[in-house]
Image (cartoon, rainbow, N blue to C red; front, side, top):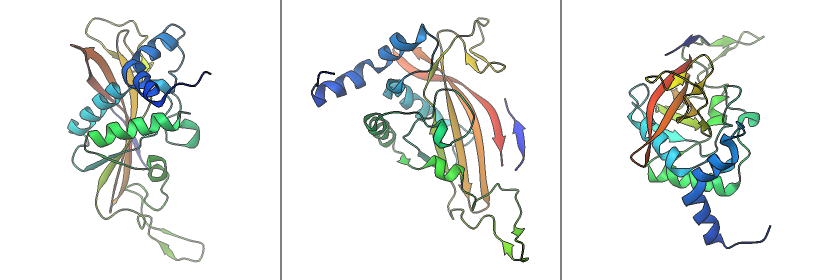
Length: 223
């Protein structure tokens, strides 16, 4: 695989849904911005996720194929990759909420961790290998016949960098500027010829009351 870097008391169910749907972003800000810690599971805010999906669909870098999304969020920031330890510890309710947003965008769900670690669909430049008995092993035998992209999306993290007026993201620290948010997105592309992964940071801002992606920063591409 080759790498190259690129630019308590019980409450009703209806009340729970109201709190999650209306005030998720407020809860993120109140709980975490001041302390600088990672967002809680409530950071799975539907408006931010919807903005990320719209940008991913429109992204010319990878919007050529069928697009699927894993509803389980990754931790806000940490080791790049999709493993059990990089999945955020969120409730089943948060996963259902994210699933609803994915379906509302017209997309299907998928298991990004399974495909990320699919040893039967190696990188596009990995050649078939022989075992100890000399038998040839097709390293792309487990690849799908039809090409598709599968996204894993991290919880959004608040910006903390003090940057110039025209800068919204610092590549050296991986931090969005103050007033902005960033979310890690890992796009795994699978097809009959092999697989590849593109890890990016999506930088978000609130414009006229709506969350939008203002910049996509490519971090690591591997195949």
